[in-house]
Figure 1 (cartoon, rainbow, N blue to C red):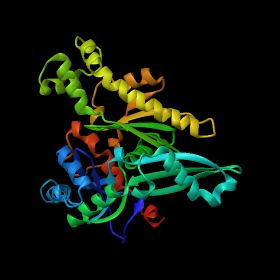
Figure 2 (figure 1 turned 135 degrees about the vertical axis):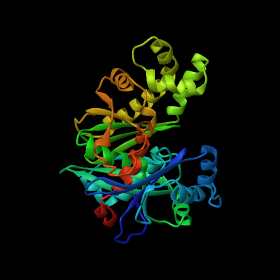
Figure 3 (figure 1 turned 60 degrees about the vertical axis):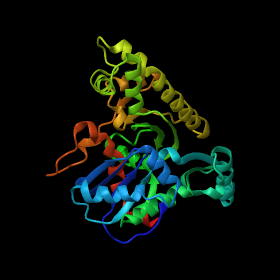
Length: 352
């Protein structure tokens, strides 16, 4: 988590992804939504904007969202920025207690071994999350410095004040911890439009992350190609029939299986890393599926059967109170999970 600037003002969340931006303001004591909005983006233009500091597509889009797409009021210009999880890295490792004075060196070794980006091109942070008489457990996060700088500059150019930047999956975990038995060791599968982020939440910390370039839009394309139908019809089959029993089940399952298996393969890599790197007997107790691409009937049962552990689509919406505001359409609500978590960063985390 990168700390940037702070004054005692309410915070709003701003989630930036390859396919869109979302913003939300919440009264954290009551989880009352004060204002929110979203704007879909062109993924190719986002890519250019994230790679080119002089490109204004991202900042112009944030400005447009704030001017034209807000329901309710935000009440602040101080922003917690959510970074695209797929371009960030989180790892957990253990050290002998005697090595604590050399923890910086251990973090550098971890970066060199597991992150395909040079250390001098990253912002790296770490925290000791567990301590026994023999070992330390350290969680490390690394983000390409150009990604952080570009997102922060775009936020500033749109007239906002960035306070903290963190991977969006951390914000998703914050909501899950408050609403979905997050005290359990949990595997989070966040299926967005174009990609799926995977993380293990354990002991109030994200222990490891992974991801794959497959999302809800991929599922729609798979069905359209396999069944030779329009994208609109394919979307309807996906959200109405999905993997549930019915006359089309075999065809839809056959269409979706290759993409779902790629997600399963990445999940198993994340689980294997988690199991091998932690020196205790804790095991993952639940799989929670979130995100806009989780709207496939039967997807929870699919992951339950593949991973042989309980999996279900998370529904944290009972916690969020939209008050007198018009609520988002049911099919669009999952896209706001991350930004709700960003808007609920405890102030004490900023003071760390």
